[in-house]
Image 1 (cartoon, rainbow, N blue to C red):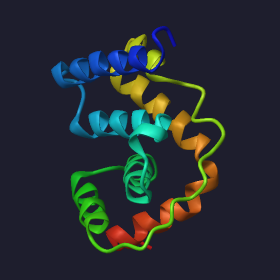
Image 2 (cartoon, rainbow, N blue to C red):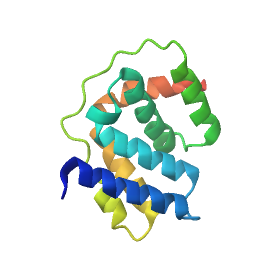
Image 3 (cartoon, helix red, strand yellow):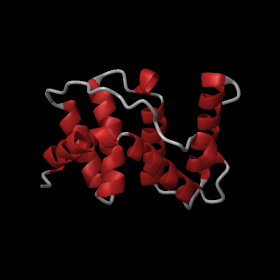
Length: 141
């Protein structure tokens, strides 16, 4: 990306402002955008096992369980507790779509969803453990 890490962060910051301004975009879409950005920049935003788990479970909750604020609160509460987590190995790629694709999309909500699905698929090897964390936190399963 033009400007490297700083250029990417600046683009995400502009996208975040657009997401906050957009009345057609829900809190859940904004939250999913943050999870995607963090999962695509794990060296900066997913340093610990808990931070990685927070973003993985957020994406999983939104994409596979339909989202919803009660579940997000349950995930946050679970992660704030004494959860023994070991940080798993990260995938070699973080998805084909990036924040630049969302910024160019006609619909922010549709752009974020496509970005999220691409990012989530890149983490396919961590899906079983992530689903387990979501079920443990929310009592589903």
